[in-house]
Each structure stands twice: as C-alpha cells, then as structure tokens.
Length: 244
Image (cartoon, rainbow, N blue to C red; front, side):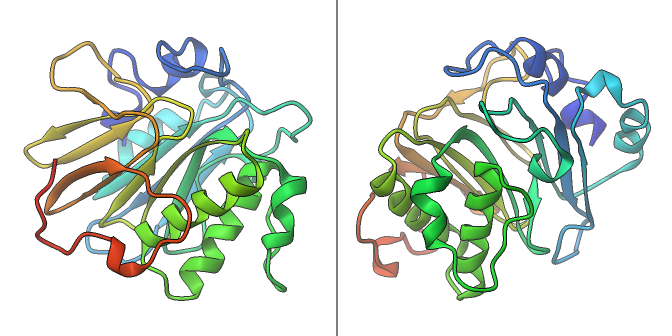
C-alpha cells in the first residue's frame, strides 16, 4: 500500500496539500483514508480513516508498508462548507463488500428522500449519504457499474449543481465517473491505477474526459460517455466487448 500511496513523487500526501489538476478545492487536508482487499478475499479486510492530514498520523506509514493487497483505494478529503470533519465522513466508505470515494459534492436536502427505511448514513456528510444510496442498489442485486451509473443519473437529475466524480470497487472491478472533476488512469503489466490526477510525471497517464465512466478489470480498461436518465442492463457492454 505504501508503494501506491506514499512513495510516488506526487502521491496522495502531496496531492492533498497542493493538487495540480483539481477544479474545485485548493487543498484536501480534512482527512484521509485507505481500504484494501487482500489477494483472494471477497470483501475489504479493513478501512483505515483519519480526520487529520497525513503528516498528523504517525502510524500510517508503518501500516502502509506492512499491507499487501490485490486492490487498494486511497482518498483524501476537503470538507465542503457545513460538513462535519470526522472519521465517519472520510472515504473510503464501505458496506463490507465494496469501497467508495467521492471527489465532489451533492445536496443532502435534495437527495436524502431517496434513502430507504433501514438505511442510515454513518455521517451527515453528503458523501456518506451517497454511499448509503449506493449500498441500497447493491443490496438490491444491481451490478456495480449499473448501480454507480444509475445513482449518478438520479442524483444529477435532483441536483444539477452536483459534482459527482465517484470511484467504487469490489476488489475485482473499478468503476469511476467524471462529472465535474478530473480523472486519469495508467495501465501496468500487473494492474491499472485510476486517480484524480497523476501521481508522478512519467509518461503513460491517460486523461478521462468529463461525463464519462471508466470500468477497469482483468479484461482491460473501458472508457465511454456516461448515459444518464433511464438505463437498463442491456445498455451495458457484454464481457469481451472492445475496450478503449
């Protein structure tokens, strides 16, 4: 985990203090977190979240150096005005089988009515509400990509000013959206890295256009325009379809 989060020349700690691509906030120092899937495990082994900047937590470097995983999600947070600064408001959020982070914002007032009985966000922050709305869809049996894209469409229809760069993973597939913020990816021989901005100045980073969805898994990387509004499962590409 340290190789992904701490060791790159412009890794998450530097991006949090001075992002180079980000459109909205200038800094993201209200918290950080990581979640990971050990090789062969069906659910996240753990999430580690703190409501402080990286340098204020002396224990994370040792933890990151000790953790090996098949999939890692790291996140930093810049709290929107009026949102609580607490660990429960810090990504990644999890339902036990999926991890979610949000680079953006949405209106709780316009979207909270979508919560079903029994689904209570762990924080009053907007990202926690969004996470709980995603858990509802996954619990209902929706595939990850279908759930993420459908949720984005519903939220955007209710809140046209929302910024919804979502990144979700179940450990075998990454689904990420661009809706108002930046995103890029880079492929390696043994995997793919999806990030808000490059963590170094090496070649190979591919920028994802706004209002697109990227799906990365063992078959490759697929990038295509987001279809919002009514979406059916038949709208999703079949396994083995050409990838971009």
